[in-house]
Length: 348
Picture 1 (cartoon, rainbow, N blue to C red):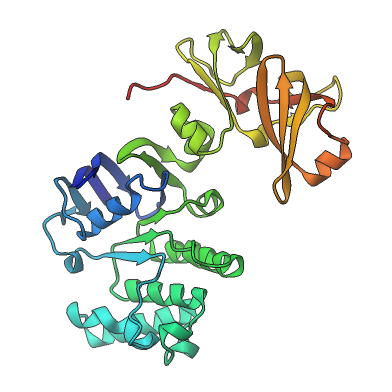
Picture 2: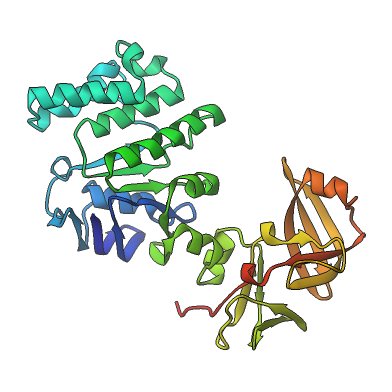
């Protein structure tokens, strides 16, 4: 278990304030937030590279807040790999062994295991400047795992890779987490990577923790307009709850579990469908007009004006072609009550 208790880090012009998180060995934990929100600062505070102003870091029940970085048994892998350019792959992997007094037999068995798992046997003689992005990332992972860390922190490990290498490494990370059974903490700006890898996470903004919990809750049940907007809800409206309905600009919308105190409604654009006929299976069916149709690669962002309210949906090329959608066309949209999330804005 990696425990972060009320961590505060004060830097010139910026601070991380009073953050607490628990990451178990079964957890692949994602740290999310805008650029400059403090995610990397938090990782470096956990590893001891930046001193804490207050709070504690515990690993396997032991308080490690006062230990030097090399004594914390926490691995850290950066997006730029941070390999030593004057050393070959083998020397990079074994670099930290000399400082940790690992028995020779243990060292050899761990080294052999990592070479096999990470498929590094054929490139041990090569220098980092001759490696592909995927090879550099696997080498950096091996160097961290060689020291048998009790937790592994990953600071945007896939952002510098092309799509082919990114797919390979994220599959590798998922497999390693299952095999090693230690806490993994991932900083990433890619929602697809987070959805694939992580089971829990937290959203940080301006050094403050805004929400933590399961990945499903973060993306489907945000607790504020900031989190809802950050995770891509797109359809976020002030509302008034009455019974099972949340009223938005005079439009009654059935919600899954609304509270009378809720003041906002959020709906993911992927959860809005074309209601092709009056026999729609959805609890919510609204008539509107398409005002925007923007191609975004493999899908379209579709804007639909319903009375005084503007909805956004993401639809495939096939759906757009099938329904002959175009700006100015009247259309009926549908979405389930369970897809509608209501919440009250927290005090900041």
